[in-house]
Amino acid sequence: MKITLADLEHIAKELSIKVSYEDLKSSKGGSCRVLEASRIIINKHLQSTDKINLLAKELGKFDLGGLEIPDNVRKRIAREAEE
Image 1 (cartoon, one colour):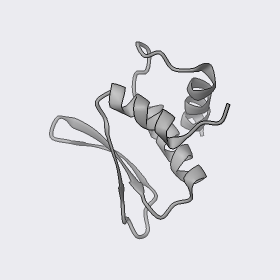
Image 2 (cartoon, rainbow, N blue to C red):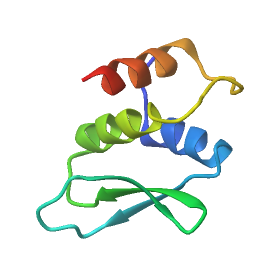
Image 3 (tube, helix red, strand yellow):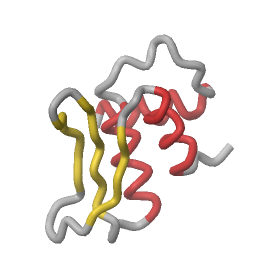
Image 4 (cartoon, rainbow, N blue to C red):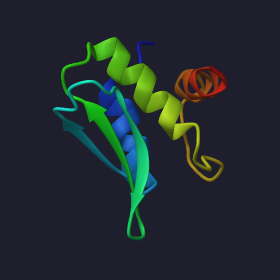
């Protein structure tokens, strides 16, 4: 089963993490905290696969324990977080 941005964005929403796509020029993006809110900002000019890889990597930094996540998505997040 192919993993989509929507799959990963849904997980971020469940964790109350805002995901946005911005014109970052020379950066791919990453995660940060603004006041008490967690955010993941992704360069909107990246290819879809790079956006998926980056979002999976950044989600791997958060506690996903209480969420129902399909095995293939959970494995992808774990794999990207290790790299």
